Image 1 (cartoon, rainbow, N blue to C red):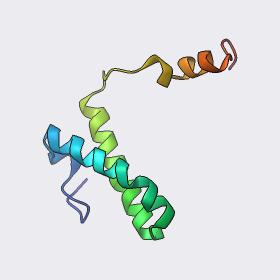
Image 2: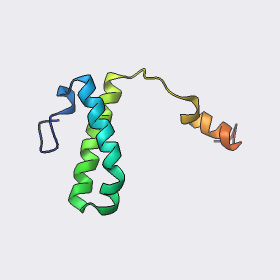
Image 3: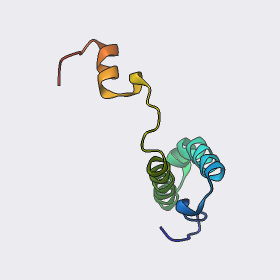
Image 4: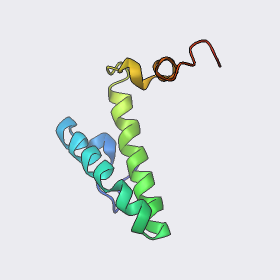
Length: 83
């Protein structure tokens, strides 16, 4: 993505800045959803997606907690073996 009003392209951010941007955007998500204009919500969603996709691109083998996977969620709810 190119430069835009929401900040520099996620691909151009150094690792520490990318993490700070992700923390900030997740912190402000709920307020934007509840009280932001339609345009603000669209812009927030686009920027959040850009930052998250860049993080996943850089960390394809990131650590995953078993409870945050589909099979882990099924195990918690007792749905083991159901689709």
